[in-house]
Image 1: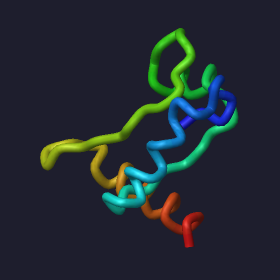
Image 2 (image 1 turned 90 degrees about the vertical axis):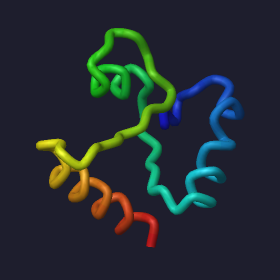
Image 3 (image 1 turned 180 degrees about the horizontal axis):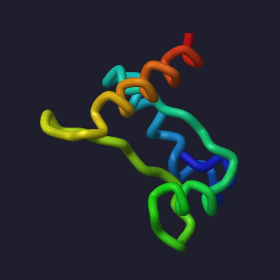
Image 4 (image 1 turned 30 degrees about the horizontal axis):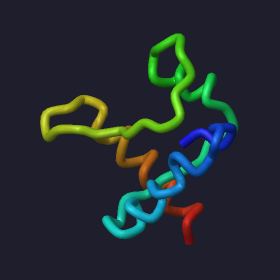
Length: 73
């Protein structure tokens, strides 16, 4: 989620949902940077990372999830 979202209230319900579902999340400083990380030219205020069983990225996504969970402790 982008910390520079205006108004921030439009995404403040997402951390509550994530915690309720035991899903790790992070805030990033810039919606422009989040958009670039998503591969688009527009600003993005929130995104999710998902995987399926056959994905080649599954191990990288798991490493990222583990790193995020360390920040939550």
